Length: 461
Ligand SMILES: *Cc1c(COP(=O)(O)O)cnc(C)c1O
Image 1: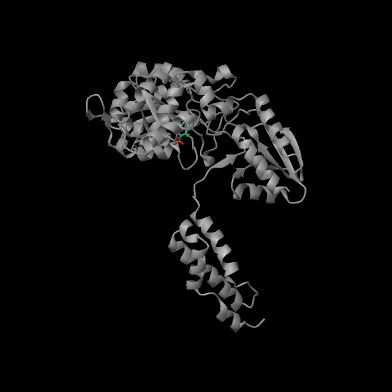
Image 2: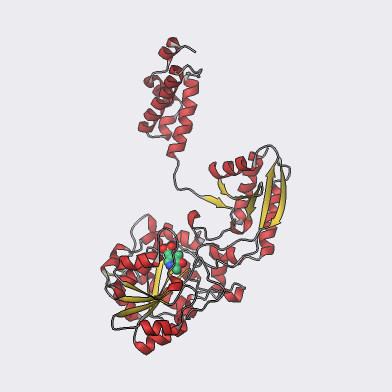
């Protein structure tokens, strides 16, 4: 097709488009800079189309809605809430742990203005930021002292830097883990300036391996939680109790990076294999580190508990300043820890714990409710058993029984359905398995069921 010179001339002028945008109320909703840019681009796209001989609607009635859609897209927050229907409760890519209402309230209380972050109200003197959580950490873990940094990776680094720079740290070859996001024990060790002294083999490490490795230059015995994998078969590892006994005998400090530290006894709730932080502290290590947003169910943070002497050394280390926890996180962490003073309150109020420990029958009831709410959509809908995992580097071998709503659309493909749920708000993340979309209800809260149902009804008319 020949290029239509007449139409090219008739392309809207940016100034006219801006006047129309003002009349449409866009100036009240979007920054002028973005409006100009977006309109210019929309007009340019039409010019290119015309030059290529394509037919295109060049009227302002077409340009403006297109620009408005684009403006809405670019001005929307990039970080936004989503509904996690994967069933994985501690999903690192989806923000790991939602916060309790008390934690959210505490953030709001201190976010707007000033706070006594590092100020002692009684003495009108400079205070310590960690003081807001130290007592709670002592009460909930049984440790002598405790502080918090940005995340558990930071906790491990600052502990190693404070206790082991330039000296050897003994670690079992079965525990040289990579957590993801490039947190690998050998590399963290190198970063902190400590020297890694590997002992044992991949599948078996004995107490005598540690004993033999201890020398003048040993600064620390480090035990690392295997988190996201397990070595099974012909294996043995040395317990934290045995390592602490060895540490006492030889005068070498012992540190345990617990990863996903839990503050309640999960075994009494039928989940085995994750000792509580209190149980680990009872064994007597000098330092224990764990995450704030894994099994603890709080904000992203790294908790360091242990003996006063060692925590004091870490308090004075210059790296601590670089890794320090901010006031909003601290507000959420304090409220989360406080919930654990009463275990029943923690189980009820902390979303991560509640979701992980919810009886399967209760998840099934939520799945049936969702299925009922979407009756009549253009799809085959079934409630199916769909076991899941906790995620967050905890309990990698432990399947958690769960229930899902399986949706097989009649008029669109399952991929199209998945894409629409994921990309258009409210964003819903779910897995496809064998041509059906599985919405697993273990990680879905009660108040999210109705929005999911509406979205499915709208998408599957
Ligand atoms: C998850 C984990 C970390 C890292 O913790 P973040 O809070 O994600 O920084 C470190 N060590 C172990 C054993 C872990 O499981």
